[in-house]
Amino acid sequence: MLDAVTGSARIGGHKIRLLLVDDHRILRQGMRRLLDLDTGLEVVGEAESGYEALAQVRLCRPDIVLMDIRIPGLDGIETTRRLKQEYPKIGVIILTSYTGEYLPQAIEAGASGYLLKNVSYEELSRCIRAVKAGEVVVDRSLGPELFRQFAALSGGTKARLSQRELSVLRLLAAGRNTREIAAELFISETTLKRDLRSIYAKLNAHNRAEAIARGYEHKLL
Image (cartoon, rainbow, N blue to C red):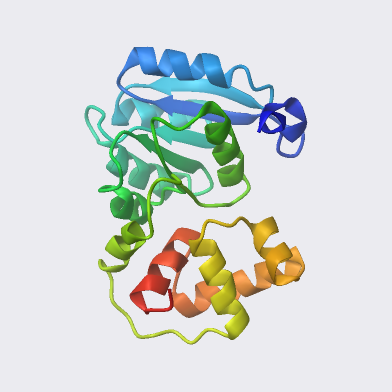
């Protein structure tokens, strides 16, 4: 894990720019000190409310926002929704003490990650990089039942996936990343990306989290 927090892991040779959103200053300060140890990450701003977070996004243009849910003004879910409407390429990781009841709303709002505040520094660093690379991350302690909750929010007809697409979807639901899935199925990452695009189209999904949710909805998982 320690190798994951060195400068050599920068995305494209550039530091990943972070905005911290939490109404507890001591938590922001502690998180900032830890993240500053990682030479591949840079905290470029902080905010303690939803409206302040949106203002800081416009000012700092972060790559990733670490977003608490319970914040003054707009809550973290609504702030995420508005942020993603204006800046769809900015990744949002919900960082909360709520163990999953807000996961469906977070995914619908456009968040790419949902982590609990007891996450380790090493895991947080890894997840930040995963989201920057286009992955969706969910705390390892949260089970697939939470995706079923999200799936229950929407309806649809059963999708038809090929056998390999089903295998890809099931590995996604098991928490595997792109490299792990490609290795397990003995296919190239280019082929896997093509399969993912097909899965998204068939399931009417925009990202991995939605694809998994649709998988449960259509009883494919």
